[in-house]
Image (tube, rainbow, N blue to C red; front, side):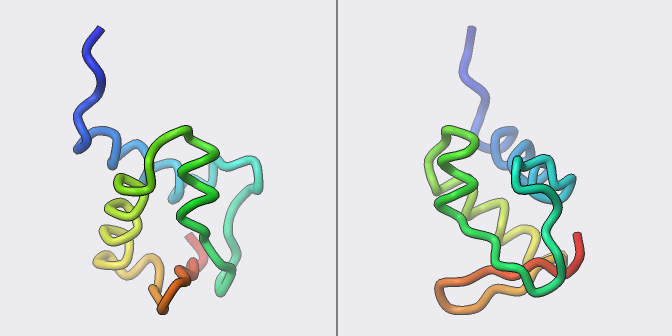
Length: 74
């Protein structure tokens, strides 16, 4: 089986974040989204998680702050 491309992995991670499918549940407005925690949870490196978070920031679904990413009620 071929490993998924980083593009599809990034999309899966983005959906995971948006859908709130994490064991912690959905993020509330202002709640901190921890890149390392998501990477550990999904057993992936932080790079595709970072890319997914950047994409969500571009869509204005999250707001990034130095060393922190906050949800806006995804």
